[in-house]
Length: 347
Image (tube, rainbow, N blue to C red; front, side, top):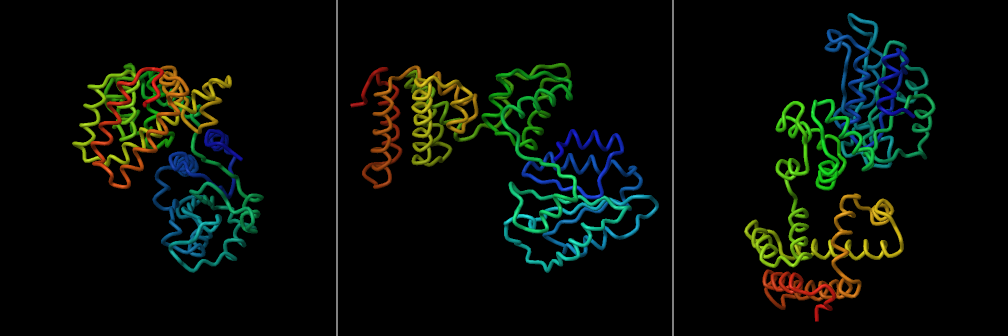
């Protein structure tokens, strides 16, 4: 199984395969792999000898016919077959009539003048299928799974260097916390920030905060930060801004509750001696989120947090049963939380 970097190295060394299977959900890397394989053709050959097919629109046997067609004005053809859902357990939404026997026959005896690229944008292949087993034995496999946080951090440092800028660790942490690790999204955002700071510029946490769109969860986190530090006026201002945006009080309350559950979970695991990375893994959170939650956790004792969660459950019930206006209930809870003492029981 190859990485995209290993694939590029192999192609540079003229070490190629007649069949490539690109499998995984990180489409940015999948496109990078396709571009690397396409470089086997000279630019002026691609119009005639590079074909890209979508199995949502064309049958697999038609793709195989193309793969068996002799190259025109060149020595090689590259045929890309996207969305090969038949290699997974997913249902074929297009409902085309595919002749998989033709595909199996081609795998066993691929044309020596064609490079076939099969793209499967799914998390898992269906290992029970005979055709998958055949492919795994015949094709060069390139896995393009979503990046881990650690790998994404390294990639962002490298990408910043390629754009002739630098990026601070805090900026990367905030960027990943806000956007996740989807590379196509990260690539657009870091390019935008690189243009903003200019050549040899430095992307800081403030740059990210200014240029990368905030989500509702980000806004609620800011509200919770005000609550934690007993900044009642700022907390209410954040709440009123959310109301002006027509955000649903129940959803805001659910996100506040989630944040306090995270704070409570972090505090409990810290007590057991877990480090930030261990906590992030256990709670399935980005390490940056754990770091921030850890700072918040230090402001409360365990009894207070447990009482908070009980109080949130009661407020949620009142909201959903219409016992009081939802916005008023949420406003009262924010005031109560932000004015509570560090060891308060909320009663």
